[in-house]
Image (cartoon, rainbow, N blue to C red):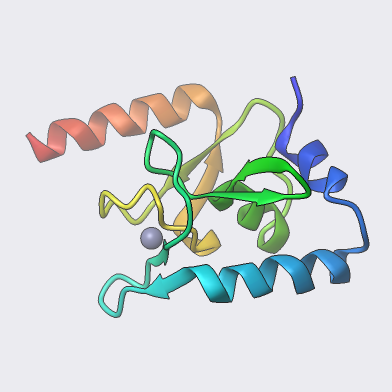
Length: 117
Ligand SMILES: [Zn+2]
């Protein structure tokens, strides 16, 4: 299994190169929701509604790649949980996400679902 950290490293170049390329994409392809400060991805989306981007013929889930770029590595097998709860799977604001284990993510997701019922 390729971890996100490995995929990120495979982007190649230095950190500065990645910032230049990815930040330019970020600025082009997001709009900011003035109320929630969600950075809503305007580019392509996958079937779950997550933003996706293509770089050198490889596809990446946008929120994960931006998380690794701006916040740091995601521990192996951990997942990203959107803390903004706006139903925006396409929010790519790295500060609207928390890395957590799969079991914690599942528990939180179920708890949130019950709250909305
Ligand atoms: Zn958000």
